[in-house]
Length: 154
Image (cartoon, rainbow, N blue to C red; front, side, top):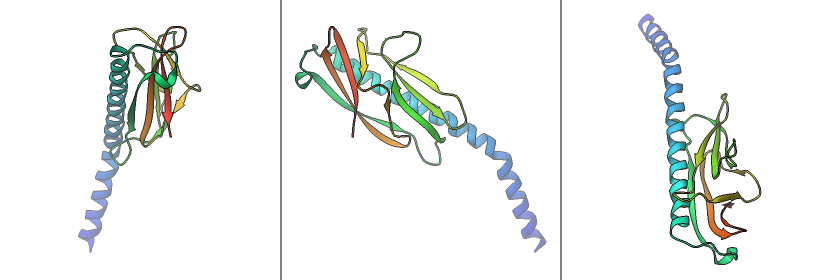
């Protein structure tokens, strides 16, 4: 009986000692996976801009849809917010802003490819699901100049 109690106490102590390392790994994994999603979004925007001509009628504009997957589950840190926002400091494009629970908000700039193009997040910041996939529509329109309109579908 004493062996069982000692074994349980040692297991609890080892688990408690390893939790900070597990949390650090979860945060690093989440940050990396969100960075991959920002890169995927940038490639999709760049492909639409590079292969198309902007038109004034949004219904006729070149468009694509991208799934942005926010990591969830045991291997991912808890996320309070994920959104597509206008970048700070007057930069062009859009930024993927996210906040991991208990930390400050971080932004990853999402460019438009080789050509600098205006980006219009339709309706202001586009809030994404904090766990799972969000469908994003990208349209290339002529809105007093080439503009990429980004909106959330569903």
